Length: 289
Image 1 (cartoon, rainbow, N blue to C red):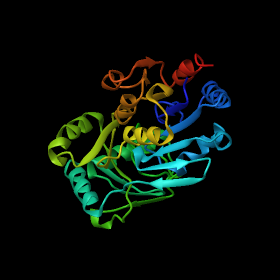
Image 2 (image 1 turned 120 degrees about the vertical axis):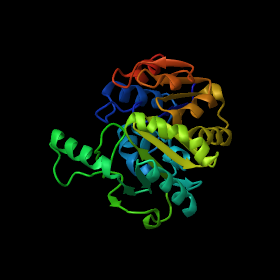
Image 3 (image 1 turned 180 degrees about the horizontal axis):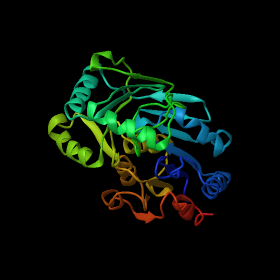
Image 4 (image 1 turned 90 degrees about the vertical axis):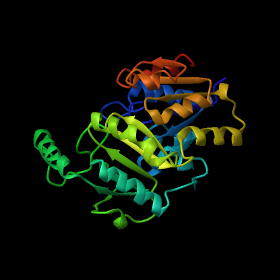
């Protein structure tokens, strides 16, 4: 019997428009009606997850967020948030400088703010995309998982460009390294030697590497929660599409990679379902109902 359904967000629960399809939403609500709990496990913080939780009626049925790749857990029934570990200032400086040296966009992420640095060679690419997409001057300059410019002001209303690491304040949850896919593949290959196991890092999308404090992963946090609640690996089903979902796959018996995931992610899952554009989550859950 499945007790918990654990879902990554971007590329998994959400389609390319950033929405939950009606079919997937109804499948998840029906699962909750049968007593299963839904857990949203994301690189996002609670402020960017809450509207999706309400859409899925998680405020009615309870459930949890595993936030920012495991930095915190939010209990919807209790309205309680527990933060486990954030970056230390010297860690932020080290990672920031590494990404700067690699000429990648750096984003230092707090609960409701992002402090970022953009290399000069990215700026004309961002400007060209602004024109091609018809973006207004007020549209943010932050790079995203799929585009050179993305709007995340719904969860991060404070967005400030900085020139150096010392301008970044404390309480940083994660650091994003944004670049062209080929460049990020090169940078990823350098991280093990540069960081020597001091941090967690994962390719969540071809353009995005997310870097977290050591010991902070979705999978580690999920295992901790399972032990605390007496939930066994065979009672949990997980869905994901990024490298930061792999440890979740390894913690449970029933793990599903999305068809849109990279091959190295699919290889770590129990099975592969359809893509996030084809209601891959619903395809599996409807078999449970």
